[in-house]
Image (tube, rainbow, N blue to C red; front, top):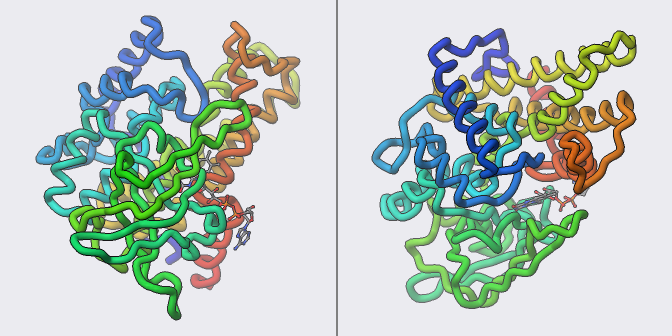
Length: 386
Ligand SMILES: Cc1cc2nc3c(=O)[nH]c(=O)nc-3n(C[C@H](O)[C@H](O)[C@H](O)COP(=O)(O)OP(=O)(O)OC[C@H]3O[C@@H](n4cnc5c(N)ncnc54)[C@H](O)[C@@H]3O)c2cc1C
């Protein structure tokens, strides 16, 4: 069976989830009217105050145990909240890494002390984490990371560099994938994950500015940074297994196909009176693609709801690959079907979001695994099934 843990047949969300959907819609509408946020595509702003409001309402760490500040709700309930946040282009950056993968990793691999230290604060929207995987010569080929840690009394001495590290300059700590024993034979062995406090001495964080000049990601340098033994995540040498287990969580959610959704809605609105054949074909095709993606993503959320550690890495790669191309095609559709000009500081929301989406367009097919790498994963599964 090609996808034993995932059922892609129609899955209807239970009616009970409509109440939750109404709740979050009303909240977002009220916040937007009150000026607490302006919609921005691609996860919006880094806004800790807004994340705290979501935390107060129980919309961060929704599936986590109550013992760690979570709410023991289902992955489908979390799915509804994510859909609404992205449909509204609300600011989610400040809690996104924590909610999506750092929290679940700590719950799976962390010690009791580590869980108690970080997870409840994450659920309140108060603890931001960065992800330290990529390096200048190790992005797609993650197993070739050179950042290394050597054992010293009471802990580890960390040296090396991470790059493209989103929001490290605003985060409290970072998961760092590093080599803890010399390269010998299998490159996936000898890697470990450390939880690094970003205020430790020996750390330099330098901005890498994005196309629009905004400081979102960084180079992070480690020079003899001391990391105590109690900040090793999981087991020394088990880093590869741990990191790859995060990836299904990282690649399958609505955030992989809904970054330009608000622009799509505005496009639908602009063309609703149109009888033009090309308009109708393009809009119909995009709508059908969205429906298929949603069903796939929902099926993966359902697998997480019903199985302990579902094997859904390939399915998640499919969602990300198809989803990120869908997002890009929305921008193309706006370009093709309207006379709109992208203007960054326009008062017209559609013009402003079109400008944002145009600048944002190269990102999704790179971050979180490039299209080519995802297709390699998918091809390997297909080959194995033949
Ligand atoms: C906005 C943004 C935010 C990011 N945030 C983070 C973050 O917070 N933390 C973090 O760790 N990383 C982050 N990244 C980094 C991201 O994960 C990497 O950019 C990505 O994994 C690709 O690595 P690379 O840039 O080194 O490109 P490379 O790996 O050098 O790839 C260059 C090109 O070669 C292709 N290629 C490489 N290997 C193969 C192969 N085997 N087969 C076929 N084609 C191949 C790739 O598809 C790509 O087109 C972020 C990136 C972006 C754009």
